[in-house]
Image (cartoon, rainbow, N blue to C red; front, side, top):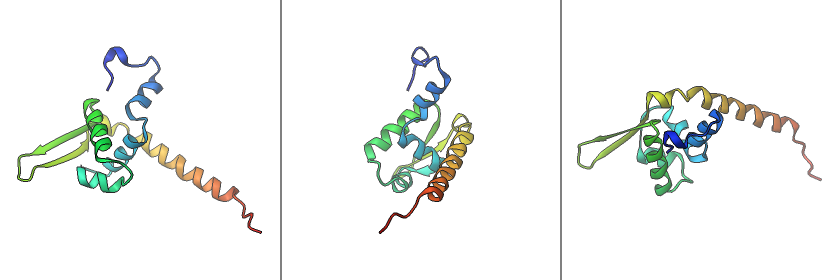
Length: 116
């Protein structure tokens, strides 16, 4: 989380600071599909620890990207969704997805079998 005084001058650096780690991008990828519970996010990103998932969700909530909704039920139910601000990142993630697909295709086309 950045305070206004801590925000970098460069807008790209600001964006990278807010969403530029592997886990936040994967969390956003999943939340772009719709509201998710903690366990659903954990299952969809098996490499992430519970602690790291919690830290990243809290950070994203603090930055206004994610909304955390707690339901007064037993057992408690907590859901995460993208805020309106978080949804404005949809085109960025979409372009990243397209670029990744194209990059993978390019590498498939240029790879050669060197089996002897």
